[in-house]
Image (cartoon, rainbow over all chains, first blue to last red; front, side):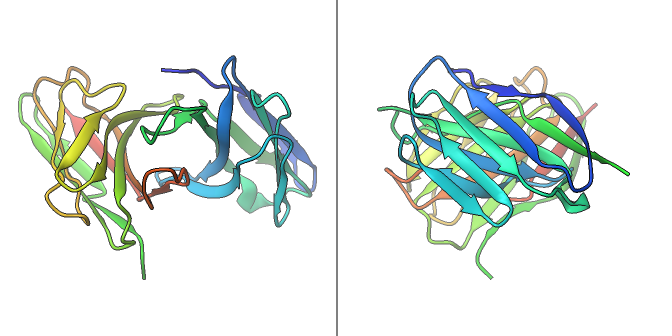
Length: 113
Length: 113
């Protein structure tokens, strides 16, 4: 299947800092989704993006669908302890049909005391 | 409450035994999916079903089987032919074809020894 390159792999930040992570691909995607997964739990959908250039917010989270349709970005402002977890990007390929999402390998967010 | 349930949360089996993982949803979603997650990896699609009595192989279907006899249920059987069955298994659902937002269950951790 297609690969999504997600970076950084891990982030060690202080509480209150802003966080940025991104996802890139060599293929064009027509939909980008961002999920958060807590240890031992299923991923929870945070934001869905459907149009190139689209910028969508969900509380302190903001995500953007890249103009080239080959990338997406997620920002978290003023991080708090409950933001700790693994953030996954996921996308549907253009014309790919309903055959499942392609996932990145995740960004581990760790907040240092 | 509407949602997706997976049972059991933890499952232990001896090598050579088949095991069936349960997935039920009461969201009235047409499409259902099974993913496998290994440490440090993104989610990989095993099987998906867009309607009752129909299902398609995903990227890693070998050693697995599914059925979709009811809209609400999509059980996954891990057969003895699966070489590395120990993993975290996630079930998801979406409204249907043409919609990309998938909602996940809490997962089942399968350990085979």
